[in-house]
Length: 387
Image (cartoon, rainbow, N blue to C red; front, top):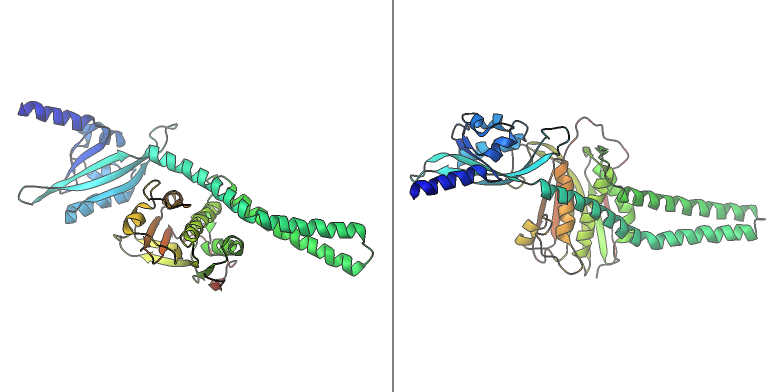
């Protein structure tokens, strides 16, 4: 009976759809099941004795670092996403999540580790669909907010045109009316360009992006979209580095964060948007997905109702947060996390009930690009009545 149970357990472990590998203290593979071997395009027997770094050479170096960390300190390391390139021309990119757990003897001696890989491709595909739907939703929300402004601008244009048609004899008055028409048309064109930028699909066209410029462009619209009882404070870092991203997606990220902050302040408060340069010398437990290097940060804070630790931890998952009435922080922050993760960055969420919330994103700094002088740093506070 014991031998039969052992055979059953071995067969089940060998054939399950999750990749499993046993690793010794020298980081060499002792055994791997068929799913794990398929990730490296090898047979399971070919992996025995192979250094772990050679088993999945196409995976992110962070996975090897995760294994090394477990073998050094003997603590569980979990939930690291990584991607593998397609093995054939027409195959899609494979997305996986890894958990590395230590293996101890009864005496407490560290024998090695297990690496367990679970397919994440379906969830990533759903998240990408969510990104697109939320992008269109954000554009629709913004269009609804500025529709009143468009009507006002069109009223100015139509009104002065009618006056010109009725009476165009006075040259100075005619010039004044034409200038008003020109100013209103420019303002309408500016709003139209911003709506088109927010509503367009992501074509994968990335370029050097200045987050200061993104914030300053959005700040022009804050007076229109913020309730009267919410003021905003903008703090832009000097000499902010550039990051490589889609400018439209960065505007979408900022719009989501602003919307969440506004929803959290039904009684009014202060919205703060900050940018900064960050250098991470070592891998931080608070940001395990960020390798050491230079990053640019965008932080949005509010003085609203705040959130508990459970909500803060779950708010970046699509369905991990409890949604309050009239708001969807889980979906919005999941969209932000998906966009940021695709760019090699990270999202952190913090807050406490009654003390407001802070969402900070970090994106890799693009050292190959030269920062433009189009966005001046500084502090821009726009007060308005706070209830």
